[in-house]
Length: 277
Picture: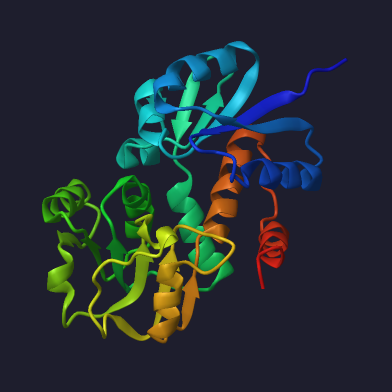
């Protein structure tokens, strides 16, 4: 009996993860035979869990909160986008037995925005809320789209300024606190904080969103997040959450592992249809 190629997502918590379903749908669609599971792995058990997984025949891993930075430190070989983001969400076993670390979050976001929603990033004034790991993973792919400007706003100003400085050779990027956003406008506002899932919002001034501007929350839920609701209340042309990004980054990981690129639209439509009306 042929043993199935094994893949998994590690995280803590992980019970809520849609990744196993997404990858099973990709496998069915592309005729691939594989197994993909979710494993609850606390940070202190990460190294031993990864070693055990690949020693047992595992082919590839996804890593989610709070393990992406640990995965970055674990692997010696990283793609350029993983190096820049200092976070790894995809581990792939190579032919020589080594592991390659990649970060597919940024390309997943850009694909969802530009391809699925027809939002042009080139020449746009873009604001990212938050200066944590989620922000770090999306900055380089956004700058590659040549926006007019990219601003990172964070409660701790120094963190935003330092993060922006790491990418300042990639385009027009600055970091600041929320208080200096007054009297500024943006065409696209990206929420990279987890606060909106618990109903919290950063202190955003009125008039921040330009006419026909777009709001996008990297987080997602069965019901609209606090930031998605803020976008609707501020007359956003579109106010979106990160479900499409989740599927697109998964498709990129699937391609890295299997060499086959699945169609994402039917998967996104299916998951959207299952949300609460």
